[in-house]
Image (tube, rainbow, N blue to C red; front, side, top):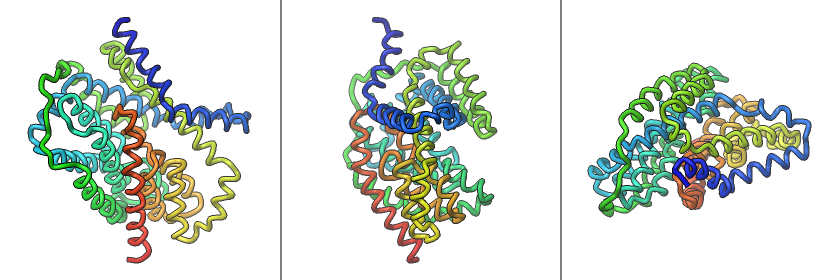
Length: 375
């Protein structure tokens, strides 16, 4: 069997073992059975600009990864960072900072491939590090109106100026970052990083690297200009002509997961029983609104939760606090969690994530509650 065949079969084999994908598909089948008349509107439930943006970013970051430079950069980074703890602190802070302006997803597309590349050259606990980078982008992206989709939605809906939004969210981000840095220092040891001898690094491909980087910034500009679909088509066409092997290695199953999530969650949000239940929660009470936002985010992700709660309350800041806190906890809390764990390439990453994320949610939700209602 040649390399091309393996490249095609590998994603299909991975999809068969993707239990999260099959759970989402089973949920969709169940929802369709109850209301088959909604089948025709399923395409309208998918946020196609988001799917297009994700597709382009997956292709471009895979191009950077397969160029081999991330592996070499990772080795040089290890030589400058004496311990696992120092490396973890550096990458967590870098991920948080990048997410404030580049959005949480883009920050992950930059940091996680670099981190995964460390697996080939060292004994660094890569999976745990990726989990903490997911925490970092959820924390850092809460600061600005462009850091994540829920902030962008709320700031646009209520026309909140950029600096006013940052000032309102700064206390929340500090509550996130201080425990995160303490947990990072605890979770990673002070042992010196051991490099693996005789590791075969990927061969360097300058043309692939330069092409991927040259397309990266224009692609981000196109997303900001609401031209993600057209930009994704251009990126796909260029790589189809110049580097088909990159397309064969892209995690296309992740695209399917996101499409299923959009359809499933929006169908659930439209249920009359769901809306009736929310109306009974008395969201005019700020404490009810806060805990409802955190809880609903665990079930349908924080972006749909923000959209749903905005129909029942005009308290944009409290909603923003609640749904950003809700990004921690279960994996569904934030779409960035799914992206990070999928890119980690470790079947046990889901267990590692929840072992740290659920206690972290309890801690930060409690601190934020005290800040909001007692200080």
